[in-house]
Image (cartoon, rainbow, N blue to C red; front, side, top):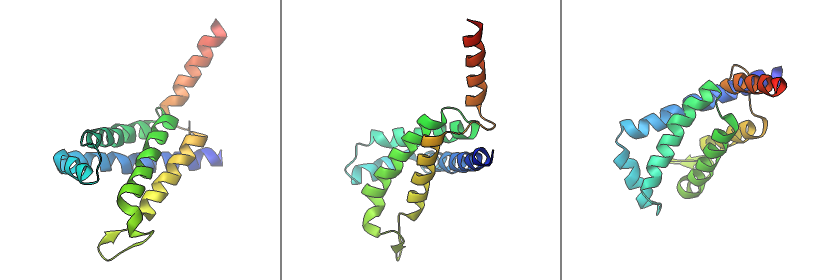
Length: 138
């Protein structure tokens, strides 16, 4: 039970953080993010993919819907962010440049949820129960 409670805390925290990161990309003007992606040598359309993944993925994590799949997508986003944006700044950064410690923590949280899932107070748990009932009725 302790593991499920801990997983719930991680799932909700990760969901809220990514929801607001995705929301901020749209609120601040998605074209700014598109430009940043282009400056990094990434296709601009990926800015939309990342923003929607963060926004919708954040909501999905909060609801506990597709936790493992969403966590895998968010882990990929964090790896790319670390490599393409923050790695050169070092773990803690320096001056005005941010390090990758926060991104690394989000990556670790995503990997935990990818490997373990979390069904406490989750839509996935409800869907799992309905699937079990349908299988036993067949």
